[in-house]
Image (cartoon, rainbow, N blue to C red):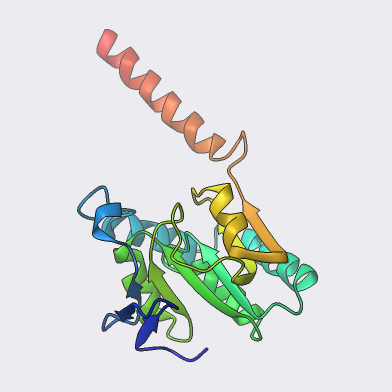
Length: 191
């Protein structure tokens, strides 16, 4: 993918890329907080966890599904890409796919765009995506909130959409451990 220095739209709006390489397309009136999305500490903690390979099998499965179901896709979007773990693995797996990453966290995209210079990243909301209708052949969403209507709006007719959502037992062992520790603390306090 050619790394652009300026992004523009059909209405001739222009957005310059930050020195790290991402572009901020999130209007100030849509921020709802000073620094929306995951903060720097949350992003680094998740990055360290993912870099240890805990979700590599999930990433491999997503990549295999993408290879099977969208072999001719040219332009893709990872909605809620975070620091780019899944994005870059998919990008490496499908070199013919121009994969873009979107996230509301500027901290995450600063890291992603520095680390994965062959990809394009933009700060934007998945609830109001700054893209034209039917723009993407392929879309990926892993554990990210978004609006179904927005996803349908920006994916091309016949495009492929892969999503991963938390199931009923997601992080069940962690929840069980926390509950046991809280019960132990409550017992100690009661004695």
